[in-house]
Image (tube, rainbow, N blue to C red; front, side, top):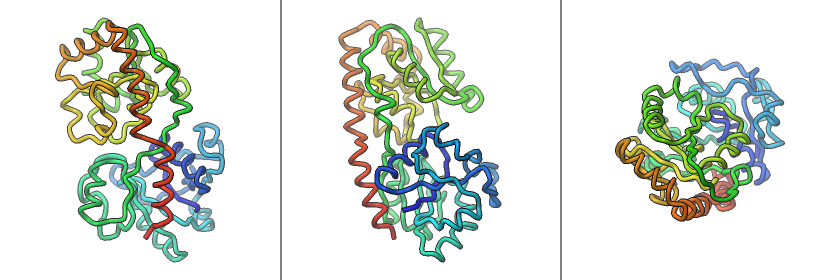
Length: 318
């Protein structure tokens, strides 16, 4: 199958493209030459920078295709995805009216916890939610759906063993500008806690993986969060994640949180410092948690199992 899936998150797109390639399918992405006509108030639809060089630059599947408007209609993808609230207007009003003429199937994806009316349920027949809320809504609306757990690059984020020291990582892009309140909480923690904090905002995946090797854990304070690739990648490296408890309520990433194994929650700075210091000082406990963390996330997100479920979902689209 040729599957049109607009890029809204490069890690998601990279991993989804490789998952599709393993199944013998091909991802189709809008190129920088695609002219969007349906722009929502958010003034953002999808990643508009892709060229053929994106395969190497972002480590996408080798068979990825990038198209402008005319090329999209010439290729005639078998499946058309709405991949985010912001691009449903372009897809449903411009692409889908033509695509349904050649027999394409329409599907929806979401990774963040949307509200009930974010997508038009009267149109939806196929849904691939990665978030828990949408999965529950699919059940309520009796839709054909697959609760997707996106493919994780366990080779890039391999578990290379336990670690010691006092380095703690945070992996949030343009943290201060995008999440100023959360960044303020983060800086408060770094100022009062006697440890070395490393903030990664725009590093490559290779460099991020290297930094995770140097750390003992991850601090993740971010109120707007869905699937949480940085969270999962930290866990894959065997680095448990610390979350501020008030921000975790109803979050989809709670699927990966096995308290005391893959992560910890804290109520306030004192609670955080106490738990983090225990992890720092108790070598046997730290090593045990790191080992269990790496194993547990691979049990929760099994790439082969997810690929089989994805194959079944795509083969039975309505």
